[in-house]
Length: 448
Ligand code: TRP
Image 1 (tube, rainbow, N blue to C red):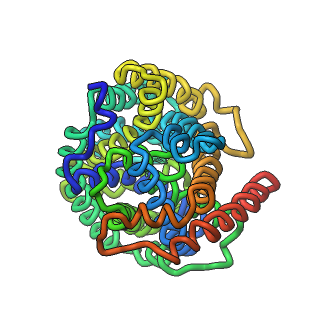
Image 2: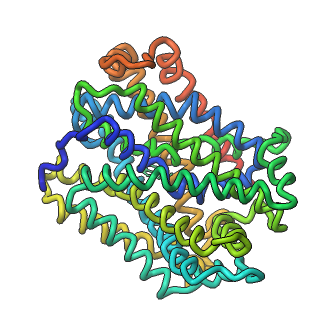
């Protein structure tokens, strides 16, 4: 299986689904609602959508293009396009970021797994689900076991080859997740008192916006689209020369955004209808949805299916994070794929232990008022990913050259062809906007 690496996706749909599998995950269903909830709701939604179109889409096209062109992992890709300049450091930053993100992603994936079991036992109406959630995460043994299980599954899939298994699994599971979300949306918006939640989600109050809101919106757009650390370069490297890029990127970004928007519709009406507060933070979906399931006909089945699919969508994202690290050591250092997956996976598991203990043994440890998991999330999601995206855009716009990038992206004709607007975005708007937002957002966070 050592050559799996340079295998190509066996079908166009396979690639779209694998990339969508990477994109759709905890970022859509866990992170998006709580970040939107703590950043003003509708005003955040607007900024997030703008960020997806003007920043996320062009960066996604750029990453896919670099990957398809070079057929390499992120470090190797930058090296081969710019052999004489240290652009490979951007790839190295990506590999490092992948370590950090996966380490806490797996902890949250573990929460989701624990909730599969809780859901199967039934959520009982009248329970204080906030307390249940805190009770779970402030344990040590159980969360640790689920974190280990989550990493084990991720390592096993990556170690033994991913293309067909993932292509097949995602093809079946994504539609189910989609239908289930629609059912939940229907349930949430028909709850008595849902209107207030819809207003929070859909009526923007722009006075809520600060530099931090922009930073969160850009960070979320990168996180949710799996951008800024070479995951899409890596997946793009398994594309062959006759695969279209611009349309594929639009499908992936569009589908991912749709899922996030639906997650918001499933959650905010319920938050208000059930008397919760939208700015509850990372526990939001784990406390709101069980309360909804508890009251809903067939709630046990829906709850079980929901957390199962959330877990699976988390795993299809996690494998893309581990794949970046593994592709790097296999390509550049000729490691055996299995060994690479295991070694990287074990280190990532260990790096994930501090954020896991941040709700128990290490509860005292704080950084700018954030617990350890939030800190990992904030630094990787709001700093490293946007920085990686900025540097990738500068690379494509100037070092490799906008003209070459455009030509390569348009090589296979489809419905969309990129041109002057795309060049403008990657040369000017993306780097400048990210730069300004990074500086002001970080400043405000540190100062405030
Ligand atoms: N996009 C995934 C989600 O929304 C997480 C993810 C997978 C990711 N691969 C990534 C985030 C690469 C950043 C970079 O859950």
